[in-house]
Each structure stands twice: as structure tokens, then as C-alpha cells.
View (cartoon, one colour):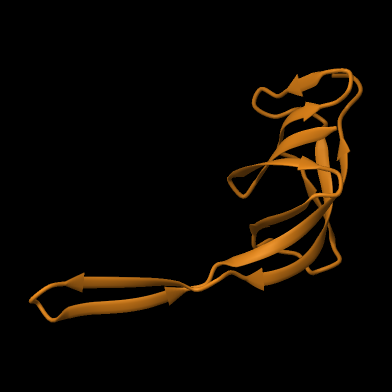
Length: 107
């Protein structure tokens, strides 16, 4: 069984036991999070595709950790103009372990 879930504007294909890296969530490590924007659920019986989301379906997971990604350096340069700007950025991420995929049997 797997599902396609929308988290912070990104779509992820998830199965039970997967560990996802998603943009920072407002929760602490060890918390249970629930994602209600399920776009598709695939089971042995068949697939249920939402219009745009599957009603009464959700994906649960545990927050494993918060961390910062690798540094990205942005350097602007215009030749012969003495124009140089250097900036760095580190994106904030959360690791989530998927513990369950639930869909309504009435679908």
C-alpha cells in the first residue's frame, strides 16, 4: 500500500516505514504528525484517486529530527563595475518516518 501526499506544497510518494525529508514543520522530535492532503491511495484492491484529495484519508508519521541542509552560496558579479555580493543560505528541514496510511472504506 502506498499513497501520494501533499506536504508544504510538495508531493511525495510514501509507504509505511519510509523516512521523508520535508520542509521544516512546527512540531518537536517525537511528535506524531498527520497529513490530510492525500491525493491518491493504492491498495491491493485498486487505486483511489482524489478530486483533488481523497476524502477521509490521511497519512501519519513521527518526527525524527530537525536539521539544516548544506550551505548554498549565492555570488553576484558584474565585471568592470566593482560589484560583488556574496550570500549564504541553509534551508531548514524535518525528517518524518511514515507510520501509517489510512483510507476510508466507504470510498
